[in-house]
Length: 432
Image (tube, rainbow, N blue to C red; front, side):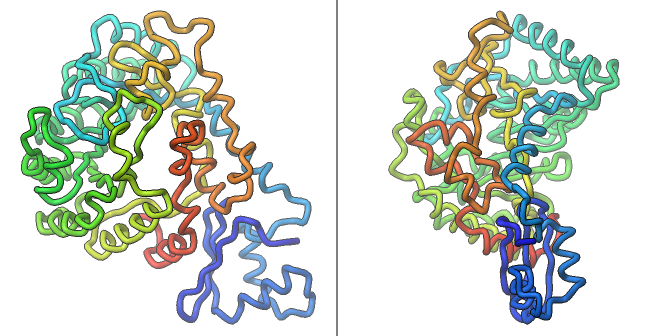
């Protein structure tokens, strides 16, 4: 027998904890038990190892047989979750136009709305899928999806009715800038299966308004804060705070302002990593790269953000957990549909003509560009194969990995701060 290569040991005062990335489980023990356990596992039969702890570690995948190929086990998990035939997930861009003008946006926007013909073709696609799946999941996306609210509501009604007729479960969420998300709109969304929303606030008023103004230049902070207060409780709200060198020092003030507004305990908060693209040169972020944090520095900022958010009583990002195929880009039963019917595999490629893999108006067709996504193999990357974070991130962002200029940001922050994240997991207990 031997220790799993994906164990992370941390000490916390008088106790020691071991986390295993493959199982996601933690075993805790008095600090003086670690050394004899590890000696025994390494082959010292005389080491006074605790039999109950050995059994617990074996059940949690922390001890494996000598011949166990953990990489192969992870590869099988990846492939099984990549090919999930029971669930069809759609990301739908109701409008690639946007009412905001954010300088780091990775999309090259145009003022297009989801037209009637595209909606009809989308419904045909859903009808074909409903005969073979158990769940239909929809993420409303943009541009700004609420600019295209009429199409969102109409399609939601159709999806719900058709899923019910087919005996298929339906769920939905929305990513929005939040400026149009008032209480009335939130109730309309909730009535149509939308349970969760992500909105973005980049700092206190003067910082946020500089980074996320309306297209005409007017600030959005006051309206957005009022909306978050109004819709918390109608929808499950996560406030994302996009961090770079321009606002890193202002994030604590924002968290304190959100707490002062009575939102602690009512919403979740999550830091986001601003990444400049040199791939889609039409996007605003192509001219923004000097402000971005390297991934390792963002990992540090993420940890500090989470610590403060925990202290203030906000729900925060989930603790490290085992993963399969990590995102829409590499899962074969998921698609991103653009407002003109264009089809993508990755939300970060929306608005980039070079990344269109087809169009609903002609789909399916020979020569589509699905193969680069569905043959992407993180296990071919030696960095991934040797990384303690592999069970948690499964290669991270495929789109970033495929592009040399984005490669630094492909990884989960667990790679850089796994011990700190495990300590936090132990300290806070189960995810909330």
